[in-house]
Image 1 (spheres, rainbow, N blue to C red):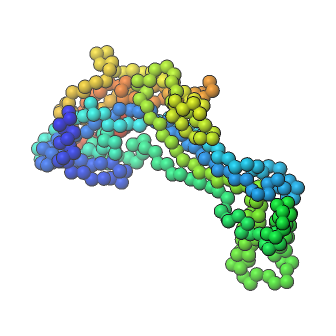
Image 2: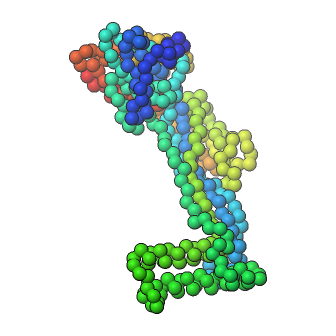
Image 3: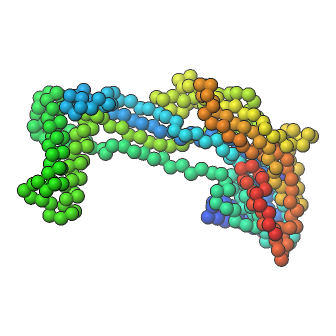
Length: 353
């Protein structure tokens, strides 16, 4: 099988579809033979994590006295939280299950492969979403960043003590609020010339008040991202620690005792492997057809502090039975068959002719 994979890399013409699937077309350049792999299905645990960086304001001790607010950030801290957990199938090309299918000379069937190298479809572009891949974008939210003390006036900066500076800053907050109300109600000597001027003046008031208020309440900057952990559920037995997590340090390796353990448990629900092949090893190359899998099933549970956080039923190619579609239905010149497959499990999704 190894030689077929190398031949595939050296001689096959590739193109990329809108779904980022790799298209390979049979022709003279590859002797009308197309190479592909069935997948090994990994369990992919996706942790949606938020990191929050909290900074105390210089006047936090005076927030209740001058602003009547008790809920303030009193010390700097970094806090990590797990917001959501996903457990999904993710197929990777299995080098032991590499195939070369031969078509009739003069025909031009095509196959599409996932970025991982697993079979997605024959003679038809795969639908978006068949790959099971995840697109993750880091997101952040924070208070507007302003230089400390940049909004303080001369009186506040020369107050001489933190307590007096806080008092002066609080007075400025109330003056800004009063000024904003007066402008909104028209109770001023000179109203803004037009709507744009009005918007700019009000925004300046809002920004200055927010900056001064942060000096009492503190700031909080949050960033969200996704961490991914993969493991082979067909080889996992009983319970085992998958990772550790700390509210101060975030995601940690499973042997790092600075975090709390999160345990994974796998239960086999359906094993469809033939009795003579209860271990998936050494597939034979079959040139007369397109191989696919009827996958088995497992239940994967993520447990923390004896509580089940997430439970997912996954289809697993390693516990499945390999079947085959005849190659000649795909190189029929009048009505070639079309087939789509799940690149994560190897399962046949649709077959039309």
